[in-house]
Image (cartoon, rainbow, N blue to C red; front, side, top):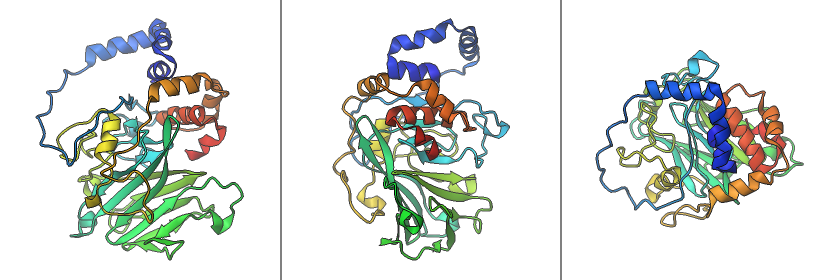
Length: 342
C-alpha cells in the first residue's frame, strides 16, 4: 500500500525504494507464486442507463489482512470494526472490506435494497452528496430513506456551535423535525450531537446504520450487515457476495472509480432524498478534478505536515486501512484534527 501511495503522490521514482526492501521482495515473490490465474473477462453487458463518460483513472486500494482474525480478506463476516460505508474525502469500503476513492462532486447511490426487512414495497436507499475542493472531495451530506421516511444529515464547519446548534439534520424535509424512528426503526442521537444511529435490531439483530459528523465531513457505516439484510444491495459499495464494483446492469465490473461514481450518480428514478437540490444533477454529469494526480502530487509535495507526523496522529486507529486513509486525509486537508473523522 505504501509503495502505491508514494508512487501516486510523489512520482514513480518514489516507489523504487520499496524494491530494495527484502521483506517487500519476499512478499512480491510469494504473491506471484500463489496468485490465482486471471479471471475470464465478463460478458458484454447491455447498455447502462446513460453512456459512461471517459474520466481520469483513479487508484484502487485493496484490503490487506488486519490484526483481527475476523477481518481477514475474503472473510464473509461484516464486523462492527469492519463495516461497509464511506467516510473522509471520501473513502469507500465495499461489503468485502476493500477500499477505494471517488473524488468527484455529485449525488451518488451508496446502497439500495428493495423490499428491505422482507417488507414488500419498503425499500432502503442511502444517498451521498459529495463536494469537491481542489483535487479532492468529501461527503457533505447523507440522506437515508426507509419506506416513506427520510433522514438527511449534514456536517458544519462552524466552530462555536454547542448543544442542539450542532444538529444539522432534516426529518422528512423538516429541519430538526421530530425524529424518533425511520419506518419503525428507532433513531438515536449521541449526547455529543455528532452521531445518529438507526437501530435495525427488530428485523436484524445486532445490525445498525451509523451516521457521524466531524466538522463539515459526514460518514455513514452499515454495521453487522448479513446476506439476509443487505445481500441484494446495489450501489457504490458493490456486490455483497463478491465485493465487485458493478454497474447498474449488475454485470459490468467497473474498476475505474471515476466511472463508477458517474454510473451511480443519482437518477430521477432513484428519487429525491435531499431537501435541497445541488449541482450537478442528472443529466449533468458528476464534476471531476481536471488533473487529480498531478495536482495531488504537487499539493502533497508542498505539504507543511510531514507524513511521519500524520502517521503518529493516526497511529491510535486499529484498522490498518483506516490509518492509511487518515494519513492521506491529514496531508490532503493540512489539518491534523482530521483524525477525529475516524
